[in-house]
Amino acid sequence: MPARRALSFPRRLSACAAVAVLLSACADTYTTEPGGSDGGSELGTPSNLSYQLLPSGDPTLPDGVLLRWTDADDSRVSDYVIYSRASSTASWSLRGTTTSNTFHDAGVPHLQYYVTAEDDAGRESRGSNTVTIDERNRLPAPAVLTSISLDRAIQLAWSDNGRKTDPTGFDYYRVYSTPYSLDSGKCDDASWVLEGSTVSEDFLVTGLANGAPRCFDVSTVSLDGHESAWGTPRHDTPRYDARNVIVDAQQVALSTSGFRFYEPSTQRFGVVLPGDRTDLDFRVDRRSDGSLWLVPVRADVRLALYSTVPVTDLTSIDVAPLRSAFATGAIEAVPGYAYVFEIQLADGLHYGAVRVTHVGREYVIFDWSYQSDHGNPELIRVVGLD
Image (cartoon, rainbow, N blue to C red; front, side, top):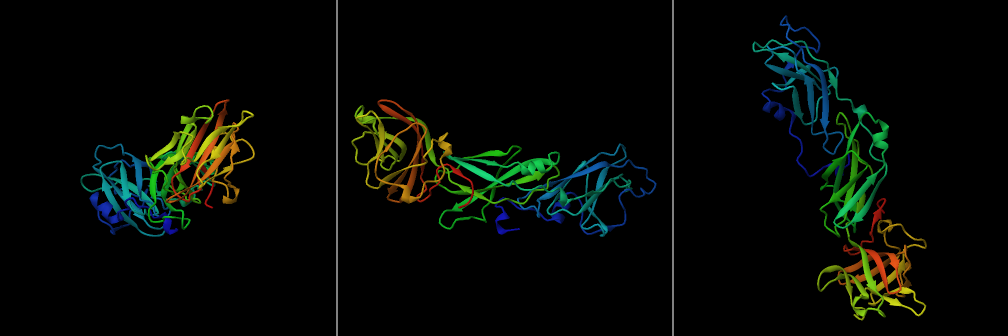
């Protein structure tokens, strides 16, 4: 597996260490076979043995396996004995004992397991059915992963091919993330963490820092715990935003006719300001024909029309256009259309987006977003790594 599969949360214990906790030793070899003789004890036999792997983020190295079985219907049973072997031709070895009808075998599991019941004299029952850790049950990873940048959050969505491959064998998805370097264009392979799990093809990652790029990936988990490989990671960056901001035309109300995505002096985002200030990102002007225009103010602010057709929502805005698309001239505000601002600040280049929702005779109403990570053109949706 690639190095990026290594996760930062705690790794597995050794198999022997886990078994020692449950009163057993490793490496003793037994000839007892599952379903074999019980030595005349006629003890009740455990049945319906099943397993569930414990995913780790690496499909080849699960954190362990949880065995479950139906108790033997016999009052003489004092405990259960678990046997395992690493291959179908190896000898069976004692894996552990327990008084429960479950057994957690930590670390990379063996290939096969079975269980017997035991009485106080040490006599064992016939063996239960054998379970085989079958890698053929592994499902594929989601083929397509998309994301939407939000304020301190990222909304993820992915294709349902993993679930549809085997609807009866599908269990849930696991979502991972790690920091992303915009400069190198790479995910931090040493810092992957589990964000959570879900049964649906979408997930909201919250509590993120605005302007901090992250990579995301998703795996598919089967009912018996087999985790898929990961797909291609996606990167995205939370950004500031707000809805339904009203800015007046400066000819109507000068005190509320200017806008700045970020005001360094107050460290506020999305601030409506007087239209005669010289430090604005833009102001709203009304022309003689009644049309309202977005006018860049500072010399280091440029403006571009996002697309030649309306967009359905603020979340429809993609990455910022190429720098050649930006100019210092004004653009008419038209309902449904989106506009992107290129803003030079002391720490570097930033991008802000506006989607106009309403244009009246005296004011404009719009939604806005702002990417505080300098040089990062991501405003809303990211479909893949560029």
